[in-house]
Length: 148
Image (tube, rainbow, N blue to C red; front, side, top):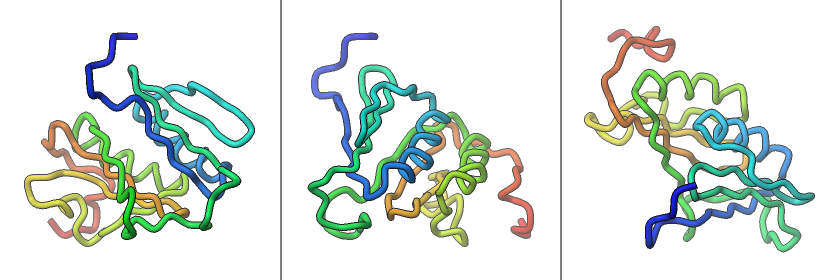
């Protein structure tokens, strides 16, 4: 592991209402993005990529049973993805792992014409944005039926 850069994120911890659902949605997505399982305990899991890691934990101190991204606190996490084709492939596969495409009428430019991304929400209300590093696009399954 390389020495982290001063000020870089060490880890992000997300409290979830159902660890099993979180492992299905977050675990699949993080592994698809290149993260590897890092830690596992009764109430949580973590996945690491480089020096940073992401934790999902079902804490007994939770005060709600669903995340509300429009309240103060975390709105969403955004991840770099190699290109537009990879964004589209992940968005399609994500629907088999507890994620739903947000803003489907605006996909893949819900963030603006120069921004190629998939906005996904899981069953617990957490939002993930998958942003193409290289937005060059080749036709994929999501393009079918768009009339473009």
